[in-house]
Amino acid sequence: MKIDTTRFGMIEADDSRVITMKSGIFGFDNLRRYIVLIQDPKNPLCWLQSMEDGALAFVVIEPCVIKPDYHPEINKAYQTFLEISREEDIALLSIVTIRHQPFSVTANLRAPLVINMDNRLGSQIILEDEQYPVRYDISSVNADPQTITAKAASL
Amino acid sequence: MLILTRKLGESIQIGDEIRITFLEIKGKQVRIGIEAPKAVTVHREEVYRMIKEQNQQAACFVGVDQGNLADIWDTLAKGRNGI
Image (cartoon, rainbow over all chains, first blue to last red; front, side, top):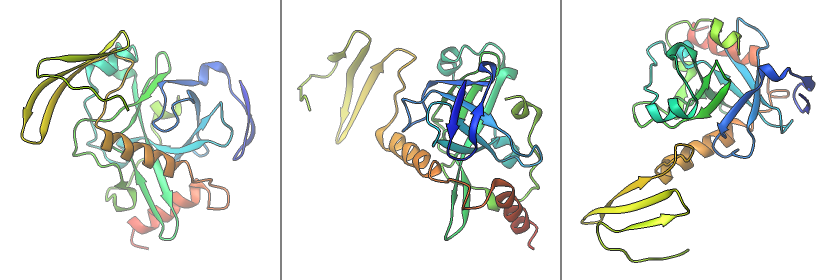
């Protein structure tokens, strides 16, 4: 499929790369189809571009890159909803908010995007566990973050 | 808004598949049970709204005039390394 985007011009993606959000991203429920655009594999920040609205793209990051101990429980209902049969098929992405004046970069660890790599169905889920912040400050991460993982690279 | 009065243990049915049952009242708190298909997500309204607003703010970043992602990552790395 093909779309004219405001950020990247005309992009064309094979259907096999498209991720279908089975329930949309909150606030954008009517838009279901996205692709991951990786600009530089050494930079873990990448784009999630809507394939239905050229003006809509989110900056996303794999939460494990910024918080290595991030292992939220994905409850059974969501696993069934996304037809997840093997845990290793689960890829997680956090939506990143970048603000200027003052500059801040935060990632939403409370509501990750859960993607079944096997069938490319995804959903934004809200974790019950309140320990995960909606605005996790990436600039305060102490450990040197790794680059993008093989999993995200294959998205 | 449709307003209904129910007794404890009674339910309301929304469409064919959603049922809400009123389980308990304690002071100003009400406990309710929700039965809904898996495709329907159920969340506390304030949490849902917070996530939705966060998504909308995230979508405002256009990236072009505001610096590309490589620059942003470099800025963060410098901050981490105390440069």
